[in-house]
Image (tube, rainbow, N blue to C red):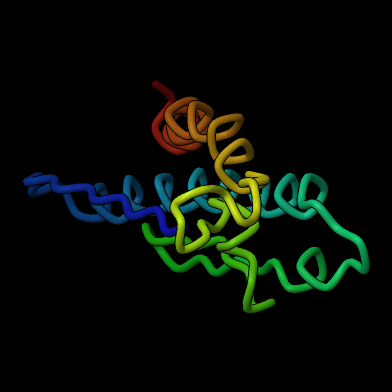
Length: 119
């Protein structure tokens, strides 16, 4: 799962664009960390390999939450047999975490901007 944000601003005021991008980056990082935390908590596990493999990256306005277990995607979406039935039922753990936290991004960015600009 990868989340990209883009801020396009045509302001001639020195430092304003950077402050807005920084606010977006800080808000996005908070959301990415929360998604990763909840994904780890919610992952189905027998031995905890997938849980231990969930990581995140964040840089500027780009962030990603992912599993390096090699089967995290199969857990999330399930697998089908050749006959078309479920071989393994989906057991989503990342999408529910995304759904819980993505709506907070706007408020977090606004909070950061309020701290920087007072509005």
